[in-house]
Structure formats: structure tokens, C-alpha cells
Image 1 (cartoon, rainbow, N blue to C red):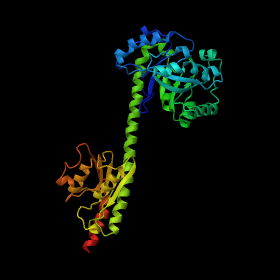
Image 2 (cartoon, rainbow, N blue to C red; image 1 turned 120 degrees about the vertical axis):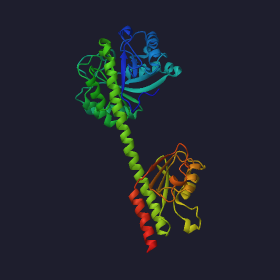
Image 3 (tube, rainbow, N blue to C red; image 1 turned 180 degrees about the vertical axis):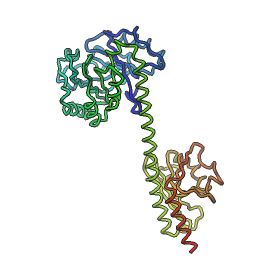
Length: 399
């Protein structure tokens, strides 16, 4: 189980086995949290509670809401859950909750083989005395001490924590501030979980926009279970916006990459020009690294097959040690001819990017189905520059 999908904001419903009334909660295929966190500061029969929760949740949501333990002590572990936040209370200095409880539960957790997520639990003053404070005999970090909070989170990341849980506390009057969330997000790459005192979709959105990956809400849904649907819809809206931004960013990044590698293909074409060859250049890229490059050498080698693409394919297959390069992108300054298109197809190259079209001898006229059936083509990248190089070469030939 992955604790977070970076392309989706997530909502966790926190249920305390001692207090939660499952009969008041209603789930559907459309309305359910991304995670259900189970735990509390004092106790409760976690195993029976998780079993009852599974019966209520899984048949409806088809296991789309993993049950994640949020234990207050070692006794609250149960192998019935899908995962566990393996918490260390880094905001406090009580060894009992820094490492002792973890030692007591370690063997049972490892034996169960459920997903264990090393998590730094950081209590921040939310304006009320919480049960966590009473049970652990620790004090929260003042919300005014942003530098200390950030330093604690950075230390957590350096210790190897996968997640950071910023907690204002159950029933907090004031949630973790957006300034603190932003500062922690800027300083660390861990999954960022934020909870305590969040009672409205607006407050939840503010946490997301500040950098939270997962927002945890417990007390509010215990008192107002009917509002879960509203919050779930808002999470979906936020995630759709994030998906759109991600797609736009990916599209923009791909365009920049295409132009960058086409310029390298143009450098190869200029090498051909310097050798009085028709100026066509090619580079082949895999995982953002050039694995093959070539330029036209038909005159130099007295070989009509020595096109730029053929040279680059030979170089690329030698680099990878095999005749197929399906994960590669081929960049060439001019539309491939039927011969080169056939070679590209046989090599199973999955993406072809070319600059200027070749209406007289291009593959689209003579061999439009030469590429691998799953291959994609992007045409016209730096087309003007690629065409100008060719035109200037033939103009000089006619003079």
C-alpha cells in the first residue's frame, strides 16, 4: 500500500475505537475517505473495532479506503489493519514514546508483514490540552516556534522517516497554520500529514494548498458524519485541479525536452553540413539520456543507407546491447524516409520526433505504417530551423 499518491490530495477519517460509533457513519462507492486512521491516546479494543470497520467499509468501497493504524501505544497494534503509522513523538522528549513503545510492538508488526510507515509525530500547540499531552507527559511545540518545528521535521527526514504528521491535537481550537505547513513542505520531501482542529472544507483546502498531502479529520466527523460527503467532493475537486496542473506541467516539460534534444540533432546535422553531406542529424534518447547519435554519411561512406537515423540506431543498439530499444525517443531534423522508417519500426522505437517534413521522400507518403503500431509521432519541432538548414544547403549546390 502506498501512503500517498502525489497526484492526488487525500482525506483520512480518524476513528477512536473508544469513542467512534460506526452505526452513525455511512459509506458509498462515491463517498468514502481515502484512508481510515484507527487509534487513540488511551485504548479500546482495536482488533474487534477494525474487524467491524472492515465489514462495514470493504464491501462498499472495494478496499479503496485502506485502514491505517494510528496507535497511541503498543497494545493498540492489530494485524487486521492494512498498514500502520510507526509513530515516534519527536516533539516530546519522553523516551517511552520516542522508542520504548516502538520496541514493544516491533516484533509483532514485523511478523504480521503489514505495511509499516515510519512517521514523525509532531504535536503543535492548538490552544487546548490534549489527551496526547496528558498520556505522554509531553508538551507541544509552540506555533510561534516555526524554526524549531521545521528543524524537527528536517531531523525526521534525515532519520529516514517516510511521513511527517503535524498534529494540533484532538479538538484543537486552532489548526496547524498554513505558514508552518508551507515551511515544512519547503524544507522536506516526506509525505506531509496534517490534523487537528480542521472543521470546514475551506480549512482543509487551505492545508492542501499550503502543501499537505493528507488531511486528517476525526472529532468533526464523529459529531457531523453527514458532512463527510461534502468533504469528499471537495477533495475530488482539489485532486482534479492537481491532475490538470500536473498534465500541463508534463506537457510543458515534454515540449522543452523535445526542443532541447532537437537542437542536439541540429548539431549533428551541422556536422554533416561541414562534411558536405545533406544536413540531417539524429539523436536517440532513453530516460532523458542520449544513447545514440548520428548524421548523414552517404557521401563519406559511399553508402546510400548511411542516413542519420541508421547511424543513430546502430549506435543506440550498441549502447543498450540489444537490437530493440522500445523505451527510446528518436529525434531527427527531417522526416524519416521509408528505409529509415522501416528500421525505426524494426527497432521498436516508441516515439519519433522530427523537425521539417519531406513531402517528396518522407515516410508519410510512401510508408505511413512502417513504425511500430504503438509508436507515437510528434512533427514540426523546431521546423523552421531544420528547414532553413536544408534550404541553405541546396541553394549553395545550385549556385
